[in-house]
Length: 170
Image 1 (cartoon, rainbow, N blue to C red):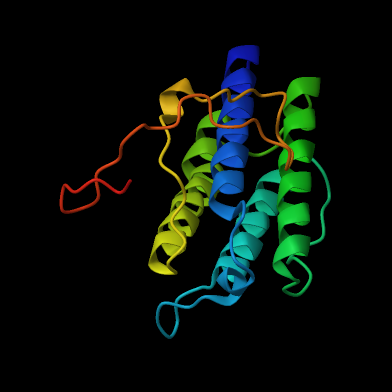
Image 2 (image 1 turned 180 degrees about the vertical axis):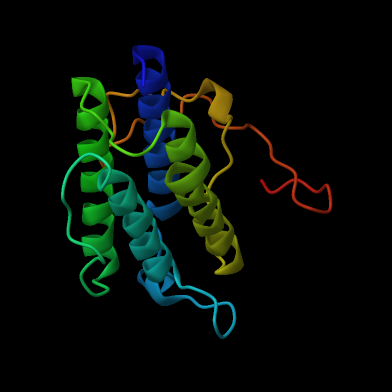
């Protein structure tokens, strides 16, 4: 894995941190256990699963406990998730060897899996009646130095956003 791949993976993890934090920030307490249907993961379970796939990625660079401990509160799951992002970021920036995998496989597997679930968290916020504010993510102040729970505010929040029917949400 070369330096440019490591930098890109760190930026991807920072994007994951930013989007996940946005989906969780200011969520009502009931959001943690919101369930759309039987057999569909709750936000709390999704975050636990996201940590599980990041732990899988981390297992390529160091010995880790797998599977994850039992499901914890949403706040504890959030702490675990951001800790894993920071650990992965540190190993990437240190140039540590990820034995048995490649940058491409990390991206196509656990990293993309976690990003998919970040999108699901955002969708669940809307379904639960607590939609997140729209934002222009292209302009977001995402940095590989910010892998933890502390994320910058939106740089360019969308002034107007249309819903699925083309009506203004403002």
